[in-house]
Length: 199
Image (cartoon, rainbow, N blue to C red; front, side, top):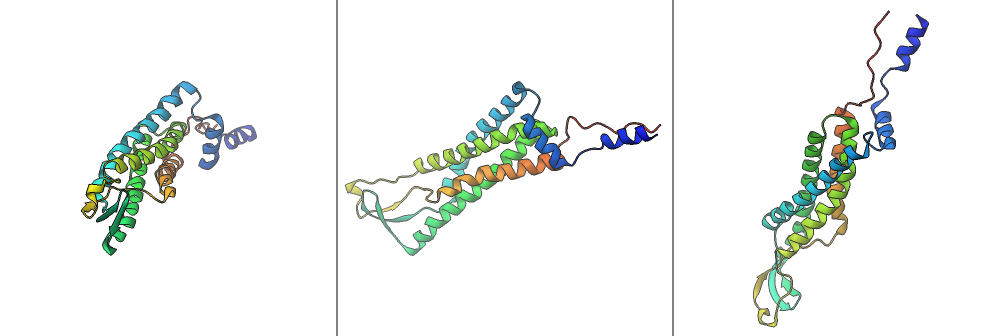
């Protein structure tokens, strides 16, 4: 009876955070072959979403408008100053939403296995950085930023840009928080053993 009690106590499920840390030390799933496609898929998918995020940013965010004073100089109004900060706020919001969506899709594809969710975590971090860079540069290229001498004195609509480069980290941070929360809260560890039958 004492031996059965000791065995049952030994097989009690460990706290989820401890299981998560063990899975990280093991490198996610047991084999490299199963983890690489999940990570690569998460990274590639995030980069593709970055293109869509760039077009959404260009359509939704306010643009700086003003009179051309030089090749890269535009004299704007007070309203244009608000658009300057509004464009950055829209970029932050779009990248956070993109990170959350990418994490949800990655968790759904990887299933409820806790180790499988961890495999996609590295891909989401790398993909979040790539997605932010893609969204920034593609969104930048969608609008004009340099003007010719013929444009001087004309009223123009300037393309978008990100001046606070810390905003580029928000996608990866949002994806990481959601993925870890889902993995810890809903993931099932492959190595959990059911309690033995009572004698």
